[in-house]
Length: 239
Image 1 (tube, rainbow, N blue to C red):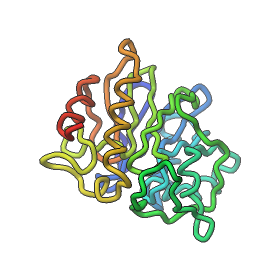
Image 2 (tube, rainbow, N blue to C red; image 1 turned 30 degrees about the vertical axis):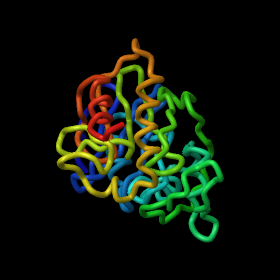
Image 3 (cartoon, one colour; image 1 turned 135 degrees about the vertical axis):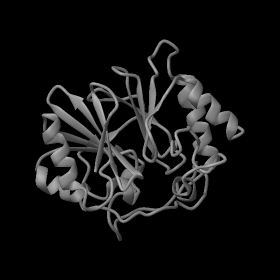
Image 4 (cartoon, rainbow, N blue to C red; image 1 turned 120 degrees about the horizontal axis):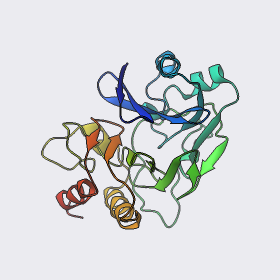
């Protein structure tokens, strides 16, 4: 697993050059954003140990298999630990037959796509829009899944975008858009218009004075820049 520092507070953890998770430092240890592919638990635990703290929280952007793959193993090995996901994607998190793939009446009636293997771990917390979880501001960005969330750290101006954005190739795109992009987030996305609207709303609601220095996505490099990165991605997508 490759470990790349983002700032004094955070590190990108990349497996197979494609799947990213993140360790974010808090006063009492680390929050792990997404648990990657199955079989990654040792790498996450060793990374946290090498950086000088325990993993005390797991925060999930959404319920796809490449983001929850090591959730059960980490939960078993870490014992009592906070595990958080949105209320909406918590319905996608259990294994079948408990998994609920139904759509609400007010949602676009597009089929929920992507790998949804489920997990045995039960979340201890369901995040709400604009809630602060540790140092991370929780921001609803539905579209890739109905309950996808992104997370923003005002301390260093990092937006943890999950699969609401993709940065493979070093540029920022909305999944499925762009001259060169990683196919999987676009192929596995639930509803493209909702995804574009989420990024527009995120841009419109983020205070202009808020620091914005980088985007850290679920797939791709860390991209340094400003709010204009989001505006350019929206323009490219025709949104």
